Image (cartoon, rainbow, N blue to C red; front, side):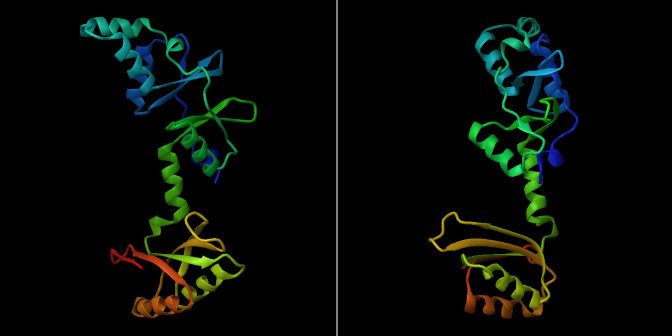
Length: 225
């Protein structure tokens, strides 16, 4: 899953010589929080709603509303923008993009092509959409969580049991976080299980593997083990 597949391709930008008022107006009109700042077609900075609020707070103390409007018309974007914009390439994965946003404590970035041209923007909201798609939660169904041995075939063994009861696999995710050496956590979402045999399925799991939880989105049931 690449950034180019989840980014917004409609890029709203602002020029370095536009005013802070212009930038604020664009942010409100398009309900966005970030604007790439351009100069002669090249990306030279980023301005966010936070930058505008910070500039307003520092310069607008005790001003009347008409004075504040005049101030915002006078201040140029170039004076409040971040001059070292963080970007991601269009062929970055959404996981790499999420890591960049998290490490830089930002909510979104411009997406650039292999020539450095801005081709989109991607935000936390876009990454949430990707996460929902990746996990298959839209299919509802049932998610099982396990702690499995980290050995070849351990996930297949569990999936074979699910299939035996009519389950169709939607997503399989795993992590090594928070588990002893030699194990991994595995999260399997599926649908189509014969519900008359659901308890039998869980009993079979418990004989062979460590179950962590089950979330049944259809029946709105949650079981923590």
